[in-house]
Length: 167
Image (cartoon, rainbow, N blue to C red; front, top):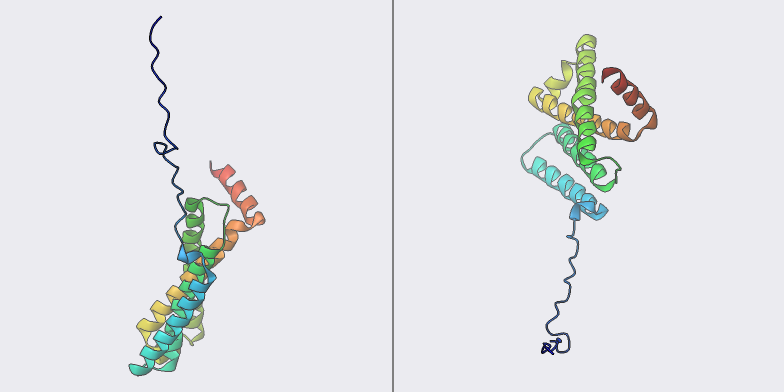
C-alpha cells in the first residue's frame, strides 16, 4: 500500500489571503456642493479682479456670463445621469454646440448688423471681448440644447428616420 501524503492544512487561516476590498474613487465633480462652490468662487474672483484692474462692470458681466455658462453646462452634464454612451452623449453636445450654438450666434450677429444695433455693442463693450464672450455663451447654450435633444423622444424618432433614409 502506497504511503499517502499528509494533508497540509493552514494554521488558523494564516496562509489564506483575504480579499482586498477596492473602494470606488471619490469623484468630486459628482457633487452639487462642488459646482455651487466653484460658481461662488468664480464670481468673487472675477468681480474682485475686475474691480482691482478697473474693468467696467458691463465687461465684467459679459465675462461672467461666458464663464458661468460653461460652468453651468459642465455641471449639468456632470451631475445628470444619462443612459447614452459617452461617445453618443459627446456627439450630441458637440453637434449642439457647433451647429445650434453657432447658428444662434450667427443669427444674432446678422440680426444686430441688419438692424444697426450691432455696431453699438462692440463699441461699448470692446469688439474682441464681445465676440469671444458671446461665442462662448452661445456655444454653451447650444451644448445645453444638444443635451436636451439627446433625451427627447420626438427628436430621437426624427433622428431614427433620418438614419434609415441615409443608411
